[in-house]
Length: 298
Image (cartoon, helix red, strand yellow):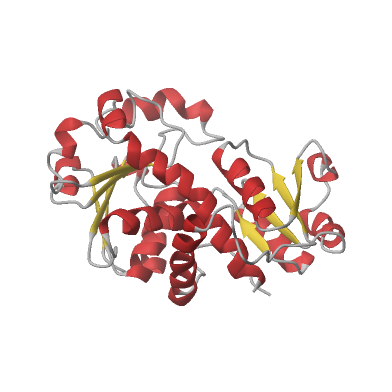
């Protein structure tokens, strides 16, 4: 049985399989020869709100022949304090797989352990593996292999997206630069676990120089709303805008996992100038996650 719980624990070989299958999934949409989820019901357990993740997984499961059951924390006893391992033991006897979007990484790992069914991490506070695989697929679709390239992250360098990029860089052989205020930089422990070529700085210009891809995310993640004023103040200089884009390589991509808050992590003009890439990236969630679903059940 396979699970997708994190990029950190995923092998390079499995990442390559999913990335290789994503292109055909995109090309063959609406006429898939195989229906690997036919006769199967998958549960989607979301305790965090979602647009792209929910829609792409619901459509993806159905397009691969399966049925999907969406459960938020108010729908099940998990929201009233039932331990995740008990929810897992019940659902493991009734459904064929689970897609979980929640806060604690340990909840996803415990669910996979106690349910004994294929489990996919659709976002936790520690990692967002489906988004990172999509981002890499989108880059390679437009620019070729990411190995040997430079990816620059600007903004909060201590969130789940930054961490997943760190682990991906070590596995796929590209340089990952993080430009963030010192208090929002990744911990030495994360960097030590990942290895690879990771550059951490508080200098946006140095990090952007010669980059093949500029990437950002919201400054205030779900659950951090009480810190909004402080975060906005400290990250005010960590924005992707025209002056930063000019420092990157000619033709460098600009990507954002969305939702985007224009005027904060990216300005309006830069977002719109790169909207084609950003919304291709959003669409590719569907195709890559279908490749993940196919990989996980075959």
